[in-house]
Image 1 (cartoon, rainbow, N blue to C red):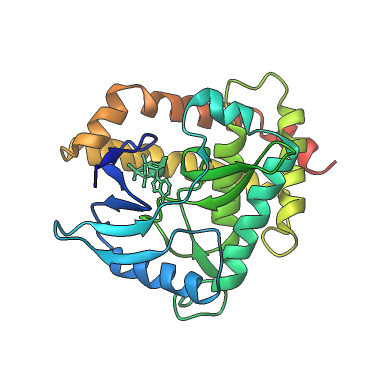
Image 2: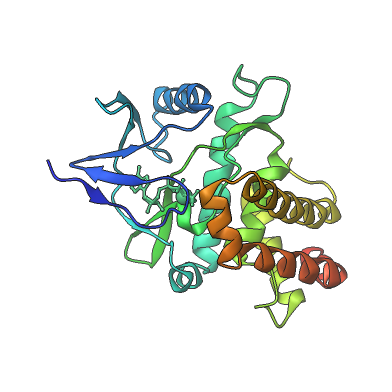
Length: 249
Ligand SMILES: Nc1ncnc2c1ncn2[C@@H]1O[C@H](COP(=O)(O)OP(=O)(O)OP(=O)(O)O)[C@@H](O)[C@H]1O
Ligand SMILES: [Mg+2]
């Protein structure tokens, strides 16, 4: 069967073979596969199924048909209230399915840790594109609900200098937190501060891995991703109060 390269990834070479996807497993693939198995046992449709390994040692996952919003213009097209609320609800399902399990350990839940439009499969139900599943589970691990929720707010709203009205961005944050439901953050300030924490963590992570010679991270640095994250962090810090006004609406 032919191998068709899939677009939207910048770290792993991912190909489609029939109804499956093949990718080099992550460092902590044992945990990833245990989580995917747990989600399968609960018949959760929001993640691919882990089907084993192929002769080249690549992990075999089910291919999820739909539209992955990996281009910048795709990400803008899925920034509708309905799609954003849908993402928040999917994250809630993931968290509720893992809360209190051995996979979450001493933490609240298992977090995906890389939720973004480029890792989300959308389908058109007749009322526009809506999220149905997440891919790219390499960075999953035990974590707190607010971690994924803040990452989602940063990535799906593209919080940063592209926004001219920070309070309007804050109102969209309010919608997403509402769609997630109670229990992730009592104080809206925690959400904005966790966005800042993520932005700082991602920038440092890419810089450090690039310094160690990781080719994909060098590529990200060279294509301006580190600078973009720095600018997004500066914007979020500068507009913290306006974001909070929108969030507390
Ligand atoms: N199970 C799947 N079903 C359908 N498409 C998939 C699946 N897994 C991956 N893809 C597609 O392949 C692309 C790359 O996969 P993936 O996100 O796993 O790679 P990556 O290089 O680790 O990504 P990143 O740059 O986000 O770290 C995705 O953006 C998506 O378009
Ligand atoms: Mg990806």
